[in-house]
Length: 303
Image 1 (cartoon, one colour):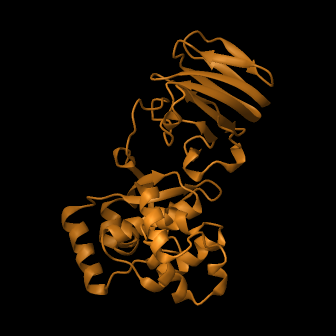
Image 2 (cartoon, rainbow, N blue to C red):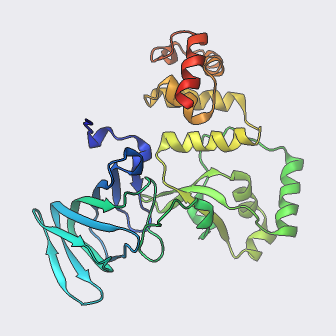
Image 3 (spheres, rainbow, N blue to C red):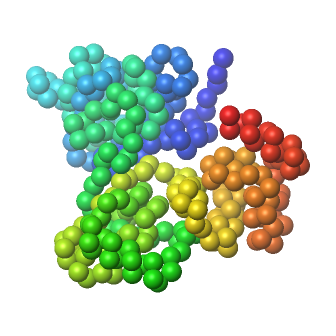
């Protein structure tokens, strides 16, 4: 038996879709092994959205709000309001427009893996698709740096990067998250590639002010973890800034196990980072007993 409270779902199961602004709480996904997916979806007031679930059957029960569902093949229109259910049993292509914020309880068969977002054709992919397969071009004016990147590059290397991009073009996209409140993209990884386009006039002119990016769906704590993972995978990070991030994650309520698992630290390394900060408050939320036991338990959890 499982009991799940939606407001306690892990960030990995909460997906914000920047293309249409809705939020999907993935209550049940493939790894739950029940044979179907269950989502709580909130659709904001706005323009019509086109969806076409080619790879899934979806049934939706309206909990709150009011909207219009239109079958784009037949032209049939339906009012969706509380206590109304619609079933896309023929993989029906359709549009949905919310006149009031709509909350739906959605069942998917087969279940989603967890982090899927709608593709350009309005469908969810039948299998996981890495972000790198969806590179986008966005105006540099809509891209902003984060304030927590613990990586730094010396001036000679920055000059070499500028030369490399000028000679070879962009061969790697910048990793970003979308902020709908400001309509901006915040850099998670690739700050120096972003900075090169921003500061190099010749590259900016050639690229017409557009930066190649891939978009992640991440909350703040997960953004920080992603940035650290990218940096550590390359073997470069600033210890002082890393310790600041650890401090912020602890203040967000993240426990030792979460931090070790998501940013690739051992318990001993995390302890050293906490000691660097010199803040006693960072030791109040410890969920490791001692270094040796913690190492053993962490390895078991990660297995």
